[in-house]
Length: 349
Image (cartoon, rainbow, N blue to C red; front, top):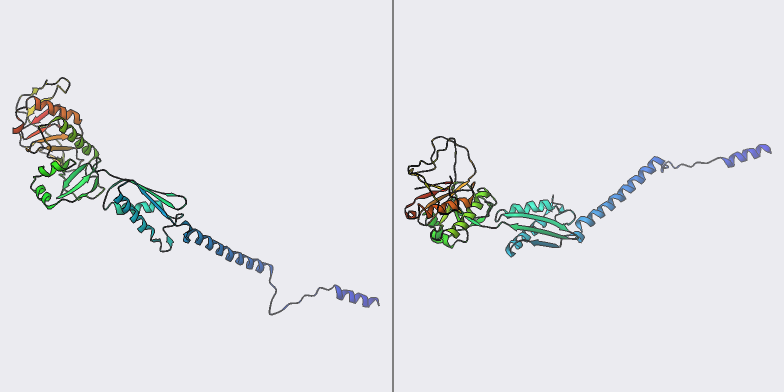
């Protein structure tokens, strides 16, 4: 009896394990691996939904483009260029009109590449404003000079930078070739400069130093105010392809005449006549380009007055005024040139 009870107890307490050979039981490492794959798949689905929501949905699509800083035509042109840029996709996938991912620096570069073909800008700023706005602020360079070079005419600002190209009529082109521009230039709102350097000019290029442009503007203003009997036909830049090694100053053949006409002006100005045919010749030259610092003013009668942008314009105008009121008072019509680049000495012929 005792033996039977013991055998039954052993049978009851024995743990039975059933295994199906066709469906093996999953181990703990396999279970963890399956869970990991499941959560990764769910994470990818959630990530894709978030990416689509943030990038490809219309929720963050740019709706407002605000352009300020110029004329209506310029604003309309820049807005059109911006819309063209936003209509394309980056890498053929990502839309550019998404407020979150748009690169303002890339948009600025794209606008500058297109705008520079037509006009020159002083600055261009592109910023984003929440929630879906772009702010584009620009300032166009202001034309203050007209530069003629290679049978073309350009509008230039006070820094010597080309603003845009001015298209001339056939009549004006013919006059420019014949150096008879007095009639047209009197109608011009800006001083006209004939650029001596032969080069290809593009919009946005600085064709001469800002000091030269500002000196020409200052001479144009002071000369008009101080000399009513003399008119300005045009200006000319003096471009030197070579640097002089031993520059020679003009030869003086007459005695120096000290002018004391006005005690409030420069009383040490010396007026000297130069009989040399050219005042820019030198024997030894080393061919090295240098910045343009000298220019000339040409009157309708052909009188040439030389200036230097490295010297004070006021002092040069004062020296010219003293010379014309003293020794050169009755000689203006017979003069070929007056050189103010060596003040206090004034040379003439």
